[in-house]
Image 1 (spheres, rainbow, N blue to C red):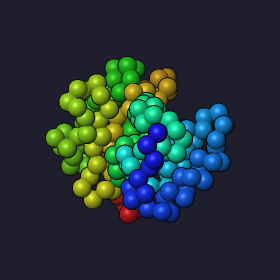
Image 2 (cartoon, helix red, strand yellow):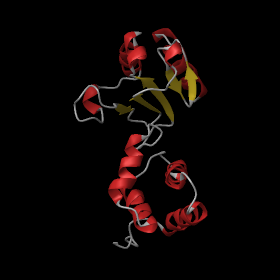
Image 3 (cartoon, one colour):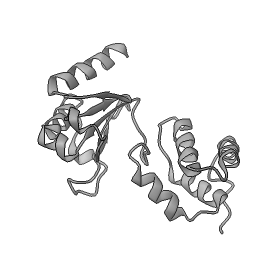
Image 4 (cartoon, one colour):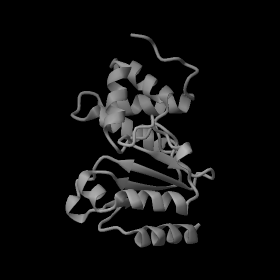
Amino acid sequence: MQAPSAGSLPVAEQDFLDKMIVGRRGRPGALLGILEAAQERNRHKYLPLETLRYIAAKTEMPLSRIYSVATFYALFNLQPQGENTICICRGTACHTRGSRKLFQGARLDLGLSLEDADSDGNEADKLLLTTPDRQFTVRTVACFGQCAMAPVVEVNHRICGHATERTLQREIATIRAGE
């Protein structure tokens, strides 16, 4: 197992992660808790590759396993996030009830271009767009599991069911007014 690079993370970050790893060792869901704590601590609410490498080395797990967990769960981010997040479900029920229009409307309201999207070009993939001022991130997720309330949008960790373009415009305007 390769030792973590001493210069890759600040000492305070290493100490924090070491405490999280020791405190969760042997517990069910330990890796999820460690990743969640690391992401929450990050100023831009994401998991940099250096952090994933450090966790892999310290837990003696392959980096591929850490990465697969971080990419499987929608709550983890591998790119910096904005201060406010808007997550739009792309599941079947939401898609058939207009979630694509919600995504397009939010994108246009915030002046975001699809050229800036973090995706490999496949429309089925998770899309992630962040405004240049880092005030908003708009992203798609596979499914919230709230199909009866489709289309579903999550605004700053609050679920909004039966969302419309007007609802989303009001949410964005409210956030902007509070800034």
